[in-house]
Image (cartoon, rainbow, N blue to C red; front, side, top):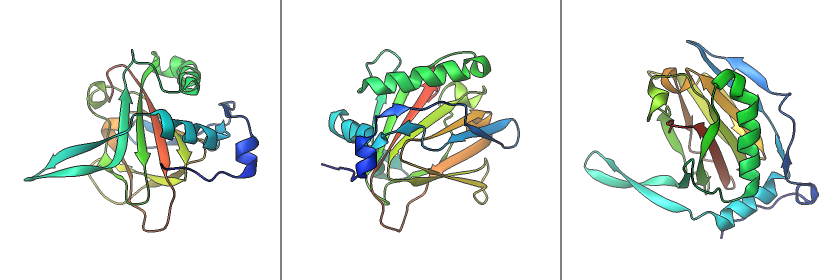
Length: 208
């Protein structure tokens, strides 16, 4: 089973979120923005270890031209009426919902989890445009635990990476406004040795 070698300090530290008032916002273009808060969840190595064990991870396959290929990561999706696999996820979702309610106008309800086992696991350029994200401003909040990986962003339509965020060890990033339909994001493959990472994505109803 995959595990994470946390520091003695991390293992001793209480696993809990900190305040959200240190969030830093980056304004993008066309009404898109990204909020970033490194180390929001203290003691996040403990949450990583719990999720690795209790989440029923599964491998997906996808049609690509004439071939069926394996999706390069393990996943699990929890809809709005499903019980989350760890009570801390309920707390994280509720805190983020309360923080962004004045801006979003609705709560975050679902949780999608991705397990990146090593640097070969990745996500190609995309926007979360299944459902309302293709036509409406929305929010996707991502909490990362485990080893750090790069989240890359660029304007929709291609071109070079415009922004990079290193995410892991309890970091939080929130993509908002028009970001899902006017920008793209990716987790590129890494050629350097890297440990596993879990991405926890909270979204409102009807956004996937």
